[in-house]
Image (cartoon, rainbow over the protein chains, first blue to last red):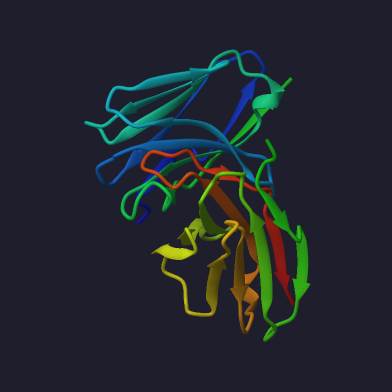
Amino acid sequence: SQELEQSPQSLIVQEGKNLTINCTSSKTLYGLYWYKQKYGEGLIFLMMLQKGGEEKSHEKITAKLDEKKQQSSLHITASQPSHAGIYLCGAPFSGGYQKVTFGTGTKLQVIP
Amino acid sequence: KAGVTQTPRYLIKTRGQQVTLSCSPISGHRSVSWYQQTPGQGLQFLFEYFSETQRNKGNFPGRFSGRQFSNSRSEMNVSTLELGDSALYLCASSLGTSGGEQFFGPGTRLTVL
C-alpha cells in the first residue's frame, strides 16, 4: 500500500472554479512538500510545510498541514489553464529531508 | 541563479547496455538526490549524495549506482539495462540541511529497447 495517498486521482474543473487536492499519510508527517509537474518534465517546487497547522500561500495556491490527521490539503482559488498539470505531495519519512516519498499524484485539467 | 541541469535529456539504449546520466546542482547546493519515475510505480527515490558520500539509499538493485564529485555534480549509472529501466530519471538538488527545499531538474528520459 502507498504511504502517501492523494485524492482525487484526477480532476477536471472549469476555469475560475476553486478546487482542493488532499494528501493523506499512513505515517506521522514531519514535513510535507507540494510540487507541480507538467507531463514528462521536472517538478516545480510549490511549497513546503513543516509544522502542524502551518498554512502557506503562493499566488492563488494555499496548502495546509494537519499533523493530527496526517493529512495535507492544497487549495487553488479561481483556477486558470496555467494551473493544469500533475500535483504531487512528498514527505521525508526517514533518512532526512532529501529522501522523499511521493504520493500517487493528482492530474488536474482546467477547461477554459 | 542557474537551475538544476541534467544531461542528456533523452537516451535510447538496448538491453544489456549500461548508461551514465549527469546532474549539475544549483550553485552552493551540496546534496543531490536521484529519483526514477514510471507510470506504474510513480516517483521513487534512488539515492542521495552529500559532500561526495552516499547518505541515503532507496530499494533499487545494485545495478543502479552513483557518485558525486567535489564540485557537487553527480552521475548515476545503470548497468545491464532491462526493459523495466525505461523511465524518467530526475535529480534534485538542495543545501542538504534539515528542512531544505529540493529543486528538480528537467529529467533524462531513458528508453530501453
